[in-house]
Amino acid sequence: MSKNITKVKVSENEMWIVYHSTPIIKIRLDSMDEPILYQLNTGGWTTRSTIQNINKYSPAKVMTRKGKMYIQFCSDWVEFEEGMYVCKDGNPLTYVTEELKF
Image 1 (cartoon, rainbow, N blue to C red):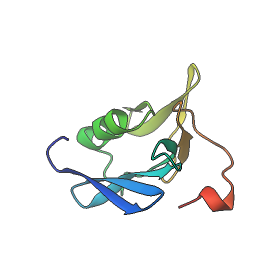
Image 2: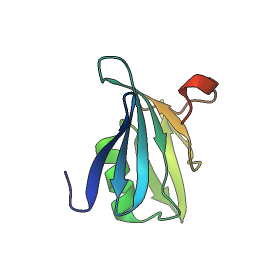
Image 3: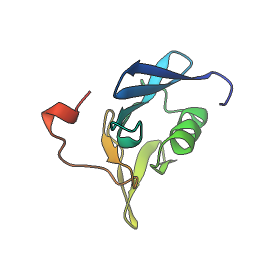
Image 4: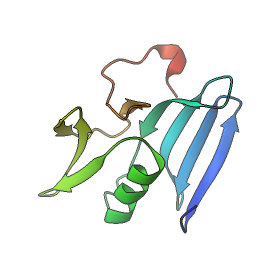
């Protein structure tokens, strides 16, 4: 784990990656403790280190360009949205069922 990063097992099927005091990644786990869904958050801290940690501890690829954050979607880049969900291949999801949401 990097400095200032903590893994927190919140429940049987949920784990958080916390950077300083911000849960930057919430992970939904299946019954075998394998990740099935990720929720990404910056907590308003769109710093280089926050983005590096999101890229390191989730399958997403995030970057900034001219002050805006973007996430890779297939071979394109789309604007990052706070609290967005990504699947285990790193692609953003447009719909998540209520039972999977955090």
